[in-house]
Length: 414
Image (cartoon, rainbow, N blue to C red):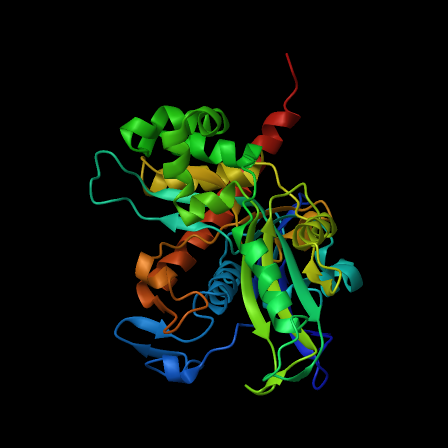
């Protein structure tokens, strides 16, 4: 266990880790999860949100999906492999951290900076951010999709502070903080970000082309070109919020603060924005663009959280191991590289040169997936147990495929 800082004061928090030593010297694999969660309002839940109750074939509770369920999957994988008579060739590292939901600076980021010895010899990492989408009922045209996150959008959290003349609200001055803030937010809400298709997104949709609707297959094979020249496809594609977020910077207005009472015009009003930027643009550049857009010198803009996004290559033994396991599970299985709109702790490790993928080998229903950060978060016991078995299979497959590739490279050329 490692104690980590608590920026809010009070007791330090903890990260948990353990290492299973392999018998070889090739780069090891880390399994990363996090133990913190977002808040939960008990009034929205049908069970106490931190009870971990098992009922109706599900484990219920905040973190069941994000990401204590992942931590359980990883820990059981480590325990099962440690008790096996078949030793791995490489080291396997389990690590579960705090602070991921608020950016990870005092969790994974702090560990990377202050305890690099824990990561010694680690070359690969698996964490949250991807998983398995089950085959559709029409089995002749659909296949299970194994989505592997190679990169993620850059978070850019901003606070806007509007200043004005405070006083009694019965005599508005036209220079009040709240109307100024509302006007600025309206400009932000109406702004439309340009479309930009990253190579990872182009690759993702090309991989999905075989199972796309027949009329969209050619478009998926050339996504950027089709979005430029086919207005009908462009409109249909961008009308899907998830797809829109893959090719654009997005902004959500998530927090507002005004006066203390209905009859008080405050001298300051605040709003917070959660922007997610495509890799290649910094938060500072984005904040400057917002400042230019609102064009109001009475409004301050402060960066709350941001970090640069990194990408990992799909041309690795670990990606090929995922492909091998997917085909063993179902010959129709497709392994698809992904860009994700959220953020994980993977970027802290990519910055050190570790190949980091967002992938947990579990299949969630659409209803289950809605529980992430929502009420009644839960995971099926069957999903959890199958996920552990698949994670063990994947670790062994990676160990075997990398060993085979290593032997092949070492063979003399005749």
